[in-house]
Length: 203
Image 1 (cartoon, rainbow, N blue to C red):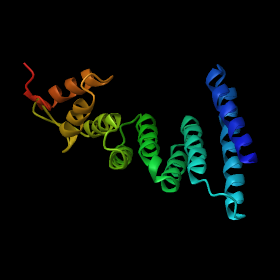
Image 2 (cartoon, helix red, strand yellow):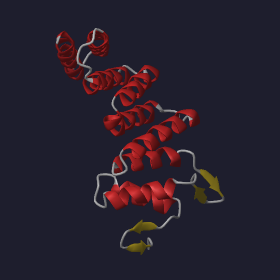
Image 3 (cartoon, rainbow, N blue to C red):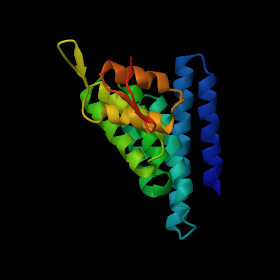
């Protein structure tokens, strides 16, 4: 339907934004992308209400991409709304949508704000609940948790669940892209690296 045309146009603007060297032009293209995603959503929802075929997975994909457009425009609140909406529409894809939301909140949190950290951890928890094999979700959950670590003497005390989340990442992806960071973080909080092959303590 016509919704797909607007969606493709939005994707084109979104891709073009990546190639822009001028920040103002990049912002303009992202705004165009978000506006066109909204048009595709409006058309798809109208078609549904008119008794058309209710393809909620497609609609969820529109919301997901709109969330990404908002995230790249530094509007994390609007992005969060879009990702949450996508997850409600299509629970089968919720693992990815909640992961995207967690990633947006993590990237937007330049000041290590505790409220945003908690929101990111909540999003990754939802991603894990929807898809327990999503290794990256455990890593980024742990990374947000460790942002709330405190020093006691010269010992770093991480919030509960931090070591477990890093270890779960390593269990699922022993040679994953973040394996070295995960091991280094575990060492920094004095936690053993636990794999399914028994416990290996750092020397």
